[in-house]
Length: 242
Image (tube, one colour):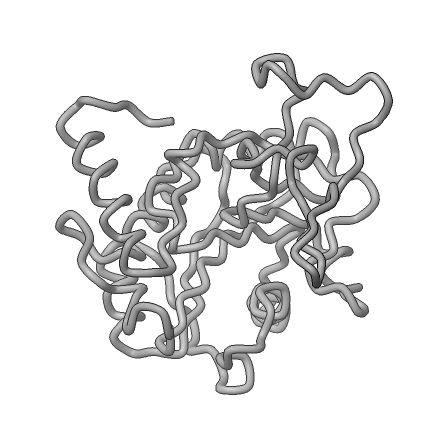
């Protein structure tokens, strides 16, 4: 069984919502939800928060995550991609003699993600001997209905439906999914060979489907209200884990 490290990236310099990763949402800092989900998953070997911020580090530790280092400034800017952050964590442990076979990156902006989803991601990774597993949700707009707006305001199909494709009624369309960005689990070979594509998922990635509710991603103030609504429903027993 491959050894899995979960890395929750939570830098201090968020722009859309200042100090987003520790903003209070339904009684807890945002980062606490992903920490708790990861700690309650059945098959993750270690859960850490990668941050450049002392306050975030202290809060993460208070909710049970390990914060073994503060991320260096060169990995904390707006243009640093996620893969380089998790690769840094993998190499940090390598240098200290603790070797992991794969790294899961889990976004702190997904407070509704369940521990069961994380367990399912790792289980699929092992069952398929996969190089990569990610999470997806149903596409909010079917690609066959998407349009390209031309300069003169004419529209054309963004993706031409294949012959025989059913567009209507919507219940008969072939389901379409999008990567929701909540979770990426990759083996170390992919991470160590990033080349030009830092979001490389290899030639045969797998996916676990998340509901639209569970896929809520907090990036703008409006998203806080949506997430808080569903968290309150879940806490009151009106909605179980997705």
